[in-house]
Length: 222
Image 1 (cartoon, rainbow, N blue to C red):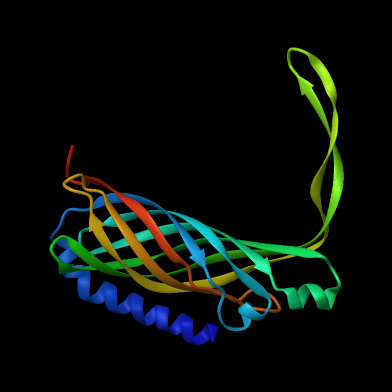
Image 2 (cartoon, helix red, strand yellow; image 1 turned 180 degrees about the horizontal axis):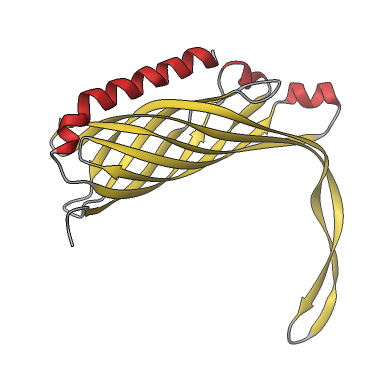
C-alpha cells in the first residue's frame, strides 16, 4: 500500500512540475499562509487500532495563481480502539501524530472566483501511542498575594506505557477555495489522504479540513 502511494505521489509531482513550469515562469510569485482544523477518520488497517480524531494544520506556500510549492505542519489527536485496550487489559489510551511535509500545488478555475486545487507531498511523520490509567493527584494552590491557600485532589491520567515511531510518509488530495471579497484571502475545504510507514502498523488518515488562507504580496512588489 505505501509503495503504491509513493509511486502515485511521484507521478503527481512529475505531472504538475512538467505541465506548469512554463506558465509559472511568466507570472509573479507570492507567499500565502493558511490555518485549518479537520475531522480525521482513520482508514485501512489503522482503523482497527486507532479511532477517529481531529487535527490542526499550519501551511505556507510560495507560487503563482496556478502552481506553487507548499509546506505543512500537522498535529493529529486520535483515540485507541476498545478492542486494543481490552486485549492489553488497560483502561484507556490516546494517540497523537506530528507531520512535516512539502510538495506542489496545482490550481484551476471552477466558476466565478471559486477555484479547485490538487496537492501532494512527502515528509516526516511521528506517531505516539500512550496507554493510560485514571488516577488522583494532589494540586497545591498558591496565590501570589495571599500565599499558600490549600490543596485539592483532581483526576489525572497516569501513563502506563507508550510507543513512538518516526517514519517517511506521503499524502495526496485536493480542495476548493472561495475568495473573501477583494482582500486576497480565501476560505477553503480540503480532503487529503496521508499514509506513513510507522513501525509495526502503518498509519493512514483522511483529514476533512476547513480553514482560511491569507494571500501574500507578489514577489515583484516593493
